[in-house]
Each structure stands twice: as C-alpha cells, then as structure tokens.
Image (cartoon, rainbow, N blue to C red):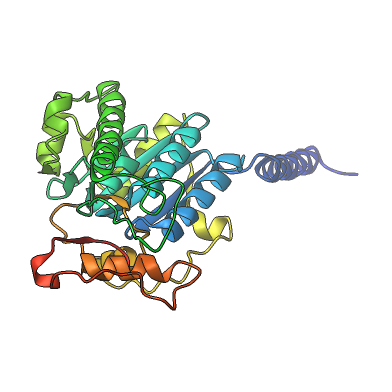
Length: 323
C-alpha cells in the first residue's frame, strides 16, 4: 500500500510533466517573435535593387517576421532603382514596423531608401542626406541627311531642355518625398524647409538629428530594439533575412564603392539619372563624337558611317554615359 507522501510526489511529478509538455507544445504552436535584419552595402543599380525588393517583399509576406531592420551603407545610385526600393519599403511599413540603421553613409538614393521607414538611426559621424538628382550634360540630337525618322527626337527622346526638365522633375519628387515623410515623423519631425532640403547638403549624423533628417543617434542594436518595441514585442529572436528566407545576395564583384559606381555608370543607358552622392565623380566620361558613334552602332545598318566630320573631342563638351 502506497504511503500518502508517495502519492503526493507521484501527483507532483505528473503535474510537472504535464506543465513541461504544455510549455513545449505552446512553444511549438506559437512561434518565437522574430525581428528580421537585412544589410544593404552597395551602390543602387538594377541588380542590387531587385534583390533588396525581393527580400523585403518576402519578409512582408512572411507571417513569422514581426518587424524588419534595414541596415544601409550606400552613396545612392540609379534614380529609378532607388525609387522602386522606396515604394517597396512603404508597402512593407503598412503591415509591420520597419526601422533603418545607417552605417557610415546613406546619401542621395541611399537616404531616399531610409526615409521610407518608421524610424531612422545613425551614428553621430555618419554621412546623411544629399537629396537631389544628377545626370550627364545634355545636348540636342543631330539630324542625319542619309536617314529619315518620324520625329526629330526619335533617336534621343528629347531636346536638352527636355532632359533638364526631367532631371528637375525627378529631383522635385525626391525632395517632396523626403519632406512629406520627415515632416510627419512622430518623434523628430523635419526642421528644414523644402528649399533647404533641395540644396542637397550632406550632414553628419549629429547634424541630421538636430535637423530632423533622422530620429535618433544609434546603431543596428538600437534599431533592432526599436523595431521590437514598435511591433509590441516583449522578447524576440533576431535573424538574418537572407538566410531565413533562403535568398542569398547575388555575387556582384563590388569591392569598393568607387569601383561600384564606375561599373554602374559604364553599364548605364544613355541619359540616365542618378540619386548619387555628389562628392563621387561620375566615371566613364565620354566625348560627343564617342556618343554619336555609339548611337549609330545601335542602328540596323551599322556598317555604314553616317557620322559627319566632328571637331576634335577636346573642343567638345563631355558628359557621363554608357560606352
């Protein structure tokens, strides 16, 4: 016959096992809250932007990801690619918190990415801002007597005045987006006018905080903490989004930012617009006769030269463009 104390111990053991089993089942049924982190360290071109967009869209649709931190180190890049990332980030922010941590630099298109988040952190010594666009020096198209076209701008797409106007329109849209997002910042709204933002200055992180271009001084650790708080989490795990989603970054041979910029500009279509740090020179500078020969080479009958005799290249204006 069992003694009373033995029965008591048996009951306690059964309860302990049941409790442990319940906790294990609860942990299995209820996943651990998760903050996903993605680092972007590159120039913004079509390939790098496409990867960021795909990862952010996957994180948006992954119910296991409760909040996202995007760590940015970028001088900017293509205007269209920067804008595409911006809109993708706005979509993500609609369904879960998105916090940006600036590492060293988020200039031009890199800063355009940042303003789409709920909250921006940067170290005091980081480079922030440079809101604006840039592009090659425009020129009016040449008319070739040996060739007919349906319009004078069929080959180039427009006059030099059209190209300047388009540069201004893209720049104005960039400024408007920054002003709207930062003016509506909850904790540290923008203290600059649209005209001051359009000056395209680069600020230190400490200056950017005082002017409302960022929300706080801090690092990725602070950004992760903030993302968890905005998601209403009391405890969470942190995961690398590329590994979590099995979406590794493409193998792009960019070792230095200047090398990445050169690669991007060389591959750029004619008359590309950039949201790129103005302190970085646009490489691949070509002369007018080089561009004309390139345009002629794209025509079906490239074996015949339609080029008129041009002055020496040293006497012609230069601008950035593809080879």
